[in-house]
Amino acid sequence: MRYVSTRGQAPTLNFSQALLAGLAEDGGLYIPQTWPQLSADEFRQLRGLSYPELAAKIIGLFTGNDIPQPVLLDLCQQSYAGFNHKAIVPLIQLEHNLFVQELFHGPTLAFKDMAMQLLGRLFDYVLSQKGQRINIVGATSGDTGSAAIEAFKDSKYLTVTILHPYGRTSEVQRRQMTTVLSSNINNIAVEGSFDDCQDLVKAMFADASFRDEVQLSAVNSINWGRIAAQVPYYIYAALALGAPDREVSFTVPTGNFGNILAAWTAKKMGLPINVLCVASNHNDILTRFILNNDMSIQGVKPSLSPSMDIQISSNFERLLFELLNRDANQCRQIMQDFRKNGKMDIPDLLWNKAKESFKGLALSDEETKTVIQNCYNDSLYLADPHTAIGIATAQKYRSKDVPMITVATAHPAKFPDALKQATGILPPLPLALADLYDRKENYQILPADLQKIENSVRAVILKNNF
Image (tube, rainbow, N blue to C red):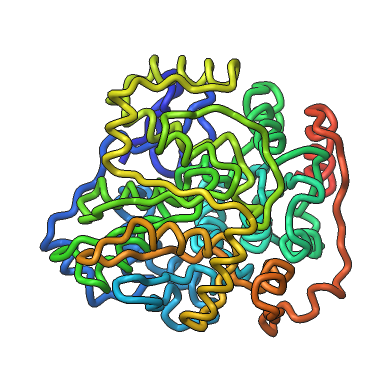
């Protein structure tokens, strides 16, 4: 399995190389050179597998010969052994043909654990084999950071610097990051939005001398390893509801387009998916594109669902590359113009092609609270704000003949204020995090200044004697 950049000016890499590189040297994103395919019979053969076994089989299609299958299976089993639900990704039925797949039973109570717990082990394995050390930088709108920190803390092969927008995550999300006091962890609260944080990460990768100096890598969903590790739970849910002998549909709360891109990848592999629904808050650039071909940046406004407070959805570039029939030159030009003008001009022919696979819906905060309340009243189910938007989107687009699955991306206890406002219920944190509010925090507050951020990365590297 080989990987190419969406912008066509970076070397072709194998899985391990793409994993460690994160972002391509030309500013593009790595994507498989060819998509692995599974026949209906091959999907059926996966039905009896446990989740770690299925994950190892699917992810193995993307790692190729880089990682021996027994090693990958062992890493998957280790990754999900600590989840607090034996099913790991349980399906809950809310209504007729409407299901929720809970992805928040990992250590940080968010779907990001599904990939990060494995990525931490993959990085350590690959780096130990190569005898290398690297330094990871990432941006988070709430959940990626804590999942990465939990997965990579105390590693002897790498340091981790996570940027989050100052004052724009929930307190639980912030504390899950800032109370991890391992010496290889560096938390920075950036005075700006998530898009500012993401731009700083991309600027560090674009700074060739800095990138080479510190051996930079990334664990945001710009890293293909993240996407590959998220594909299995879509296949697992679909098989449980009758695939490949029955179509299914998915609704995904998403801001950076990574989680739903994993579902789209499963469809490219042959999984019979009827429709994919994008669920957004009032930061609705993705739904505006799907509904009106309007991919224009309008500024980020804080919401009850902060993990979707994004206006520059990095992973959309991978879909654009495919819509353009892998014309890297055209993809590169469109992305450069988008960053320059704040608007992406996509021909109607390509937009119509995207609409064949995707639907979209955006909700305001007040509408989100209403859905949380109704969901609890109707089904005794407590949904966090992101999942609630997903449920409303699923209700709008579901078919009476096709099961609709909403992926639940976060535990409701991560957003206690929103749940309290909507239902009067204050969901408690699980026992392992019960003392979270009493733990000591450690983080810096810095302006969105590239030089200051790079100096902070250098400082944590020096601290760890790398």
